[in-house]
Structures are given as structure tokens and as C-alpha cells.
View (spheres, rainbow, N blue to C red):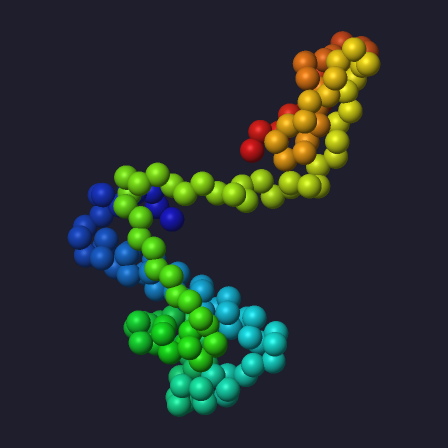
Length: 151
């Protein structure tokens, strides 16, 4: 996705189209995710069509790609898939980005790194990673004995 500074230089028509495509794709991604879940539970496209009194071909076409979805199409598919809540959030460019709580995918999988000597205690760092409290060198003096990953 382009940065906001790159969008400023787009022509008004291009910005309008870009805005539509972003919203449409977000709606399609949400419906696709719910559709995959319902498929795994055994739901069929025929059941979706029956739930909203629609044609199976229309359902099939719209579940393959968003084409030119309207809000009516989006709402109908959410209801047919037994979706409960649709949330639409718009954030101003100048607003701070939300704090991501799952920014580190390896939490809980990292090995504990033991302290290198009895004189130095190990320190617990955020996310349960253990590393030496101070910078240590190996017996040969070739550098640190632990690698510190900074998310």
C-alpha cells in the first residue's frame, strides 16, 4: 500500500478510485475470511443463496472476487454467512497508529539464554526472554555470548 505522502500527489480521480478499492478489498477480505470458516463447518453456496433469496451463480461470482460490490452486496453476504457485527473504522492520517499487541510473532518460542558466569545475574526481559545483565565476552574474547533481538 502506498504511503500517505505518495497519495497526496495523485490526481483527485485516482484518489477516489484508490479509496474505493481499499474499502472494497477490506470488505471482501472480511467476507472471504468468514466464508472460509463457514465452508469448514459445511456451509454451501446454495445455503447462502437460499438465506438471502438469491441466485447461486450470483453468490459464486461474489465470493470469488468483489468486482463492483455495493454496500447492499456486502451486507447481504455478511447476513447470509451468519455474521454478527460489522465494524467500520476510519482514522485520520494525523492520528497516531494503534498500538499493535501482537507485534512479535515468536513470543513463547524463544529459548532462555543462560547467564555466562555466576557473578552476573540474568535479567528477565519483556516477553520472557532471558539474557545476561551486562555485555559478556566468550572465553576466547570473540564477542558477546548472547544475541539480543529487538522487535
